[in-house]
Image 1 (cartoon, rainbow, N blue to C red):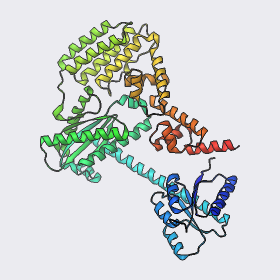
Image 2: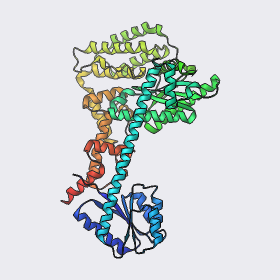
Image 3: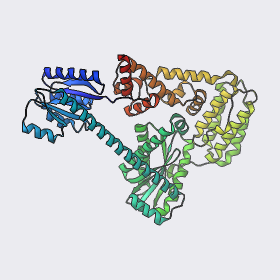
Image 4: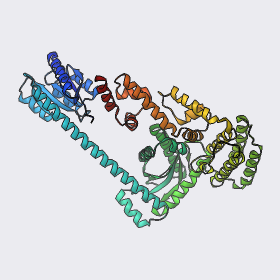
Amino acid sequence: MIVRAYTCLIVDDEDLIIQRLELFFKALSNKEHKFRLVGKANNGMKGIEECLRLKPDIVISDIVMPQMDGISMIEQLKPELPHTQYILLTAYSSFEYAQRAIHANVLEYIVKVPLREADLERALNKAAGIWDELKKKEEELQSLNVSVLENKYRVRKQFFSELIRGEIPTHRATDFANRMQFHFFQANYCCFIVEMNLYESFRNEYSAVDQSILKYAITNVIEETVMNVGMGVAVDLSDNRFIGFLSWENTRSDRDTEYACQTLGSQIVHHLNQYLNQMASVAFGHPHRGWESIKKAYTEAENGSEDFYYHAEKVVKTPANRFHYDNKRKEDFLQKTADFLGRLHRRVSKEVLDKELAALNQFVMENKIHKSIMAPMLRDLYRDIAAKFKSASTITADVEEFPVEFMTFREQLAYIGDFTFEYVHAGQLRHRAEIMRAMRFIDKNLKQRLTLEAIAEDVNLAPSYFSSLFKKTMNEGVISYINRKKIQMSLELLNVQDYSLLELCEEVGIVNEGYFCKLFKEYTGDTPKQYRMKMTRYESK
């Protein structure tokens, strides 16, 4: 059983008292590892500096010291370190000090001349008990808040999903809006769709739990961005899509509405990339008013989002800049794919293949065919390539795996190109060499913040195809592999010396300390602190 170690810090201007307390903690550590001395300071100002740096669980401080007394120090530290417990040592029995100590919520008030170690040990155990109780209550409150928040989002998602399908009558929508304080639908509003870019890669990179957490975060960022420019709401709708509403009181001109939508859309795209490193595009419908127009408003936004298929990432679409589709060119495209398939042979070079696919891409960019028609044609092309080379191939191609739903046209065409070259050259098992190269790239840059796109670019494969190929070859997603390697590196570092959490994060290239702790415990079963304690006990044997 792992015993929790409480970190302690001494603040006293008398060297003899500090030495006495250091010997006390050393003797205490011989009995148990419950309390660990991590620092000391000889005045209140230095005490504040060390406490903010080390964030101890318990502070043992003198009252009367030069520059700043102990109680003033505690009063300044309380807002920054609310869980830290404070024990005061004093040679004075002043009623004024006692009053100030009570006001500052000091745990214990111990006379240090003579200093009875039994009193100090009792005070430390009392502080540890209070610290545990505070932490437990905080965790319970956080758990309750998360539960309430999750339920709120779940109810919202169900409500808006039913609403845009036309399954909720106006009077029920009004009642729900009053309860949720959605009063803005009686004013002018625009519906918008936020769609995550590179969603196939997102699904391969993150576990189901991490995906859920990120989607909550995305919803919050969208909603906070909306509230910065007006009134509104945002909801996780399905898979890679979020639905939102921007509302304003006064009637706006078409020009002002266009500007408002473009501004909000650009801010959402920027904030998601800045805060969560997620790329997304946004599509708006026309202005509407009232609950009865919700379904129509959503349909317009959804139609606008269909244009994302022919865009790169991070795009803002409004009704004023929609594409015109020429679906009559379907037969021409089918003929071009048939010609492409006819010219395809086992000795085809990457350069020739890229040139052929570039010609297909140019035709489609000049003659856009709606996604509902184009995506099935690309699936058929993928199937026909697999069928043509299947007999002599050592690679098994499942045509049902072709990612139609969440990829753009360019991504699908790049996927087909990489798959085709691997497939027709199957006997060379080129994918093994490229995965090995990717692993070397990861090892070389492990201390940096690695992205799927950067690794795929290094091995000259489309990100989505590379992500899929890596997972099939390694039985592990790219990001999962990188995280595992980073945690392995952190273990090697901890075996050498006692790094702080911040230092570990910097060494392995993980910015968020909370996320690093989560990964560390997921892979090792311990927090970094618990792991180091185990290593210390093992080394002392």
